[in-house]
Length: 117
Image (cartoon, rainbow, N blue to C red; front, top):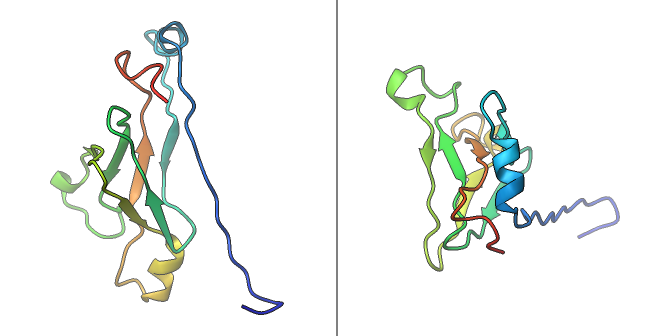
């Protein structure tokens, strides 16, 4: 650590959602995401997911491959005691492109997941 050093810690939390609000947001023609498709700008992101609160989806970074079967979004279900790790853009750069930041998004909760906190 020094005076010119930089360190960032950011905590994100998706608050519970009422079923009525979810139904209004997901009416036909509406497309909403808790977080749209993106890569993280930092080195790594640690995701402490809770059982019953799924929503994280990942897919291959388009710069890594052009294969059609790798363009599918894959759910990342919570695992008891597990931590999902996203490689960020910074680590991708530090690795000279050998590691790719992973593209991910967070879908809206299901009605069953509404109210969980």
